[in-house]
Amino acid sequence: MQLEAINVEEIISTYIIPWGINIFLALAVFIIGRWVANIVVRIIKRLMKTANMDEVLIGFLASILNVVLLVVVVIAALEQLGVNTTSLLAVFAAAGLAVGLALKDSLSNFAAGVMLIIFKPFKVGDFVEAAGIAGVVEVIRIFNTQLRTGDNREIIVPNAQIYGDIITNFSAREQRRIDLVIGIGYEDDIRAAKQALEEILKTDTRILEDPAPVILVSELGESSIDLAVRPWVISADYWNVRSDLLETIKHEFDTKGISIPYPQRDVHIHQAVA
Picture 1 (cartoon, rainbow, N blue to C red):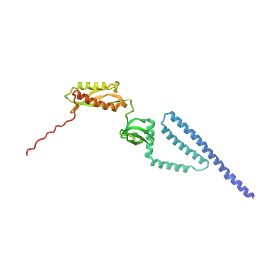
Picture 2: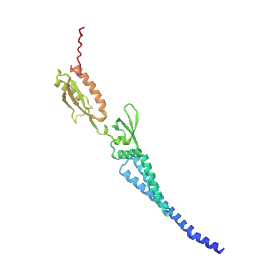
Picture 3: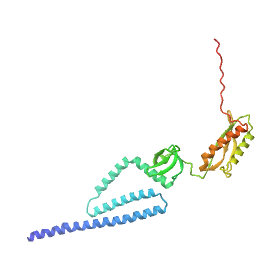
Picture 4: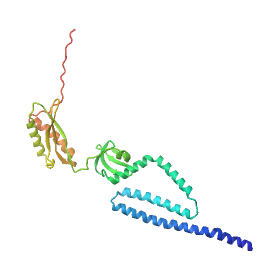
């Protein structure tokens, strides 16, 4: 009986008490580590909000940071239990490499999405041309961007294709210049044509006075004298003003007898002698 009592005491002192202490310390490390991690995540989120970062990006980065800190806390707790985490870290590294290779396209889209959200080459509501597609930006996500085309089609474009290509933002500036080329015949009076164009531009109140519109001879073409007409308008009025100007110019030129020539070709038919 005395021997059994001694063995029980040895087991308790050798195994149960140390393991109990280690388990208690591991739980303490895990609980305190999670508490510290939550505080760190909240501080980082507050700093990102102070920097006026996008809410989607803030939430995504906060989630990643939370997972990373959780992994660190779990490894620290396992170390406290006496578990050899070296092999575990090697497994995590190998798994991370495999996942990274498998998701390289998604990761490139994610990286491009982060760059789009941080540097903001465009915003929701802008009319842009990106990745060969022109449309209004409706949603900017981490992995892709949603555009609405002029004929009301919804197109989802991967962010890597957008950021890796030329981006043209037609809504970035408040003012845009309309570039028209109006051809007149060589027999027409250039000064009369320019005066007619000036009157048309002055009549339209949507055309800005500053910068002032420009009318000049741009080229002596094969079949016409080309006049460059360059008025400035508010970006939102661009297409309406452009269409109205073309219609008005054609009507006024017809009224004043100014021709708008087009390429012509003479065809000569010769009767073959039998």
